[in-house]
Figure 1 (cartoon, one colour):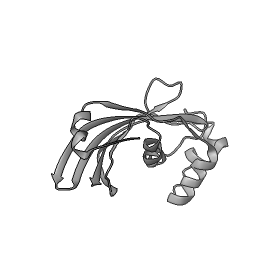
Figure 2 (cartoon, one colour):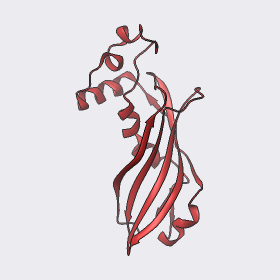
Figure 3 (cartoon, helix red, strand yellow):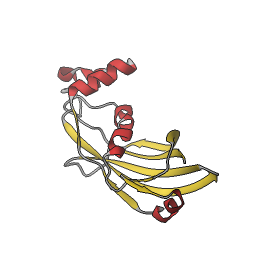
Figure 4 (spheres, one colour):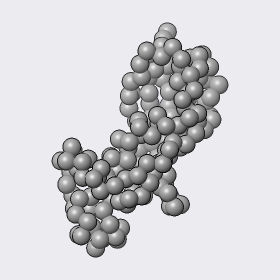
Length: 153
């Protein structure tokens, strides 16, 4: 991550901040997410039944892909944060679209673009970020989201 003065955030608006590292989605992670969320739909947790679906295998929950954004973000080398930041708070999402499945044992990565940076009051910056989660060897992304993060500096 790049640490910059909070007043410099606006200079990055409209810029792609970079790509995360690739991250593998295995069956153990899908199962752990199913257990944590109590969402045990067979398409996620039953490899034999899932093989008979149009996907041909189990797929990750869309919410699992979304929930991995904080981890993926931390691996983006060009991601900008204020150097004097005290904390960041998840402020929500303006939009989330699940565009394609992530099949078991595929790898994903996130592409981040800073859409807006607004100083809401002294010491508070609201960032609007667009994330596209790509699936290795697939033309269509798995997810596109606009995420709002509030930085306290």
